[in-house]
Length: 423
Image (tube, rainbow, N blue to C red; front, side):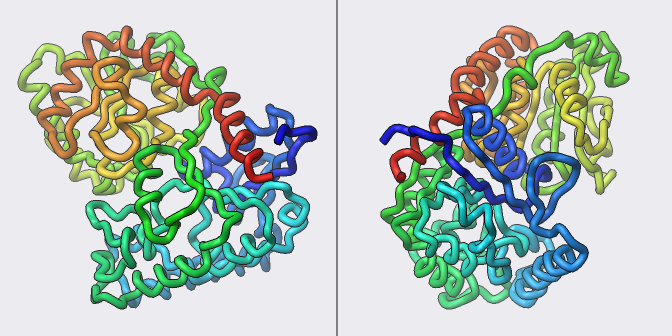
């Protein structure tokens, strides 16, 4: 059917700003509003001033939200393999029931995004499904169809019934992951649940899962405003950031630089090899880092001089970082559809990344960037050598790719067409 009136859409997200999923959700809200629809964003945690609605709007509600978060962590603590995987697995046992919230009650469309950390539970997600309204769920990782992990790596347990989970201290057939799988299998099987994945990679995994077997699954990428993220004068950007105007910069971004899944060790090895092969160029090249460096040891013996910007919350500063850089490098070992790659490409900065997740769907190898073989630092080095002398030309193609595939109004229309099939 055709839309003869503006839709009332409620988006649900754990946070309004922090994290890639929250950023993607906020950009979708903006795009849908520009398309003429009434959109409300409900969040558990809110920072800054925007139109999102915090569900922890009083000291008492904030305390309850904190207790749910703590309860989730304490519940899982007795099962976890060790502290290193603590936030890689969420049980989804504790969450609030928002099915009677006025914004949910009046909505034509309920659109769920990332809702862990005590925001929504498996049970309260079912409460939304029981309203018998169209519920769309954009997956930013695998949690919806696994026994609790956000990324399963090489494990294919989600295709059957989970169990024997590598994240647990005592993996066995009927372990916690299997128990949570059973709950999700029962409580997510509703005909009004429609799944959106940001990448074909995640979409294919969702389709092969037992929990979402038979569900309506469609891939729609995240949106970006290319009027905000756009190319600029590299020299002026460098000066604005306090960088040397005559040097080349390779950009690396991670909330926590030392997080194993961000692959900084592979980048370090690649830079060492590249510097040995191109000693003169290495003298004129620096690594620009955005993010928290909690372990200074990983920076020791780095082949290039580094310049750190620390945590960057300001969009304008982040855009300058992209504009100042000759390439953006993301050696991540697990990714869906990174906003950072999209942002860099929109700013005319070619990208280099491993062949993991949705990255090969974004970077067209040797056309607008370079896709290296996973875990191959030597190929990452080859990517640096390939991109640097072609940075400007590859950057132009990168910008074209974003404008044709991820521009906000295009993505808004794809969502509206999917909504329309369920009204």
